[in-house]
Amino acid sequence: MTTDGSDAALKNELERYLVLFDQLVREATLWIEKTPRESLEWTPPSASGIHFGTRLRHASVKSLFVHMAVADNVWATALRDCAPGGTVPLPRDMNFFHEYMDGDFVANTQRLHEETMAVMRGLSAETLRKPIVFAGDNSTWTVMGFLWGIWGHRSYHLGNLDMLVRIRVGDAPDFFSFGGGQMA
Image (cartoon, rainbow, N blue to C red; front, side, top):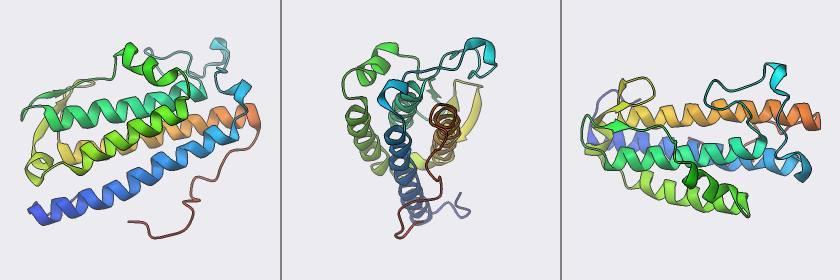
């Protein structure tokens, strides 16, 4: 996170963040491509001990992939729209979630990601400084800090996807492949 808080420093941090975030999102598609279609909705047996807390007991490769895109969008939109000190919600709208699960879920989430990137690109330095409260644990963040939290959430679930793909397929993409090119 930027240390001087100037508008230029915040916008520079946002630009670096957007490069890393966009690449992380695009890399996640490799896990979908690696997974045979018939395994996309497989979930580990409930007695296996592999679950994601009390809110999500039966996560599949497909549902985790969609969850990440939906959470990114819900949070980015809330960060933009909430008043200073406002609360950023948990992504609990199941109708919104299923809108992206149905049909071509990869194309659906790619469109949602482009919308999310547009929201993030449009955040002003003033907005990036804005304090918010996260509904998940009532913690206080700046918008810029919570963007890094979104990156952390997505990378955490990419690890979950990696585990599920390895269980079903036996092999998964290399996380640090990033296809060459300039990174942040």
